[in-house]
Structures are given as C-alpha cells and as structure tokens.
Length: 321
Ligand SMILES: [Zn+2]
Image (tube, rainbow, N blue to C red; front, side):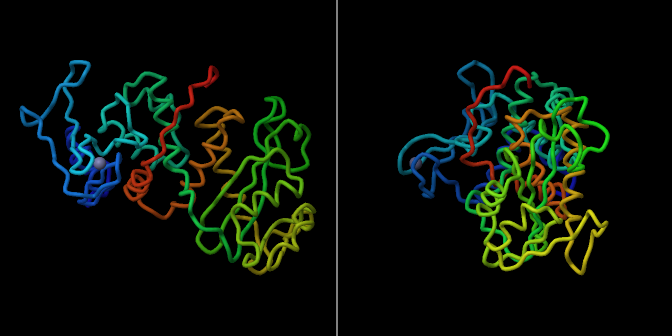
C-alpha cells in the first residue's frame, strides 16, 4: 500500500505504471468497457514491441489498450474520464492529483504550470478537471442530524476587500458574493454554495437541496433570515454573536467559521482572487478538502481518482483566468 509521495513516485516510474495504478483503482481487476458497459473478459492488446505503441502523431505511448469482447471497440482506463483526450502523460496527472490532494490551501494553475513544466492552458484545464472529480457524487444523500448553516461574503471591489473581512455589517457588502456553507456535525461533511443573496428564499433553496429538513436540527448564528425558515426543520437553535455568545451547549457555528477562514486564505492567497463564474468549482474543491481532512494524502488522491469517470469538461478557458 502506497502511503507517501516517495513511494508513489517509486510505484509510478513509467506511464504504463500509471495506467496500471488507475486500472487497479477504477476497475479493481475487472476491466469495464465504457462503450457498452460490458464486464466480459476483455482482450488486452499488447504493444507490438512489448512496451509502447505509436500514436497518430507519430510519438510513442505506453497507453494500455483493451478490446471489448462484446462490442469489439477499443478502450483504455482513461476513456470517458477527466483524463480523456489529454496529451499530458498520465503519470504527471497522478502526481498533480497527489499534490492538489495534499495541499492544505490548494494549488494554483500557475504553480502546477511551474512545478510540472506544463503550458499555462494545460495546467489551468487540468486543475479544473481535477476539481470536477472532487465534486461530491450527485447521488450522495442528504445531510441530517445536527447541521450548521452559516454564510460569509467573498470578493467585491479591492478597496472593500481588506479590513474587517467576514464581518456581516461591513461597508461594501453589496458588491460581494454571499457563500452559504452547511456543515454536518455528525460526519464533518461540508457543502457550500455561492448564492445571489441571503434572503430566506435562497437559504431555503440551498438547505432543501442538501438537507433532510424533517430530520435536521439546524444550528445558526442569530441571523434573522434563518429564524424565518426555522419552521421547516426538526428544530432550530441559534447562538447570539451580537451578544458575544459563540457556544451554548453543543450549539455553535465555529466549524463553519473555520471553514470560511481557510477558504478565504486560499482564494486570496493561493489563487489571487477567483471570479464569480468559477467560484462554485473552487468551493467544490474546498468542500472536498474539508470533508476529507482526516484522510491521508494518498487516500484523498485515490478518492479523487475513483470519481474521475464520466466528468468530462468541455467549457473553454476564459480570457481573465
Ligand atoms: Zn464494449
């Protein structure tokens, strides 16, 4: 069992090793045809020279190719995944995933570019594809039990961005993007969303999407907007920050505050400000990181890989990124 970067690098000496690593994680010994869904005993197509094959561009590749016993089409472990169609060696992909999985504050596309000798466009695209894989499974269940709901305000004009950041009463709040975070006190899972504003309708929409209201005990600060929708839940308790009350019994929003401070440190420190358009992808990355904080770097990496299927992105790089 691989446990650290050195062992991982040892294990991934060639691109063929990287393919095998992915095959093991994604298929667990049963190759699966992504074209027809068959698990039949597919044929492994050995390269003519034993190690590599020519690509259409004339270079050599250690790609491990399989042929489906049922539909007769060829495939590899990359077909239909976030790696599909990328010209970057798989080995490099896996090392970047390890790096992104192990950096507490995330990694910018620029750092990936520098560290791995990639074109800036490739690094940007790679980082976003990896973020897509970090997104929780669409069928993941609703949160229940004790759930903290809290919000923060991110971004806005540079002159308003410093100082009492995070204060809900500060000037310039109107040009900031509100982010609502839900933290499960039962599992530690976090789900966050950027919203147009924190009026009760939007808060209710986020909560309805992620929370089993009838079985949820909602914990918030004293914000009036939560009191207006409190009737939806099994119970609602609030700490009164205005009266400097931060913990009462097991009621607190401290976990959300910790999440927000780490998020902001990374958005401004590592990524040097993120536009509203891409904010949700960064939030997905931070939800993943916070939710898996008790796992090892390798466990986090393997979890990303196990989610790498069926998530191909087609959007283009914006001018400002
Ligand atoms: Zn097939």
